[in-house]
Length: 139
Image 1 (cartoon, rainbow, N blue to C red):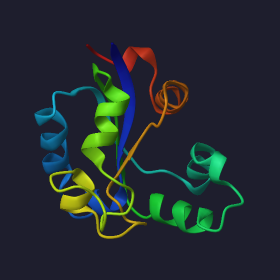
Image 2: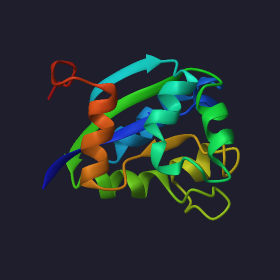
Image 3: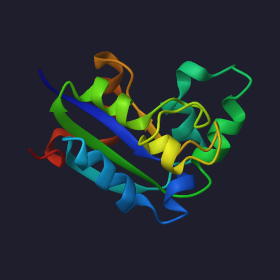
């Protein structure tokens, strides 16, 4: 099934200028980037985007990290894009991520783990709509 998912290349990656390397890994796995833009989140925007984590101990640090530098937000499209992108990303903790995944290759820590990806069709729909209008997504 062809579907879409949201990808965020996080500040730890944009500040190290490895966005192109991350994009190459995404495309090598057969996912098509159908929308992409560089933005800088405000604290309010980061809090709204990650609202399901509000109140958790890591939330303030998450907001601080996500607003520390620009991010690249993307819409990826492909066969089972959500599941496939989660495989390409690797485990949240890069220390246990599989070889060849984005996080194993580039992540600095569990907090600075280079990328975010939607975890379900419902999340993908909400997250894509947070950053993109349909006019900005190309096939």
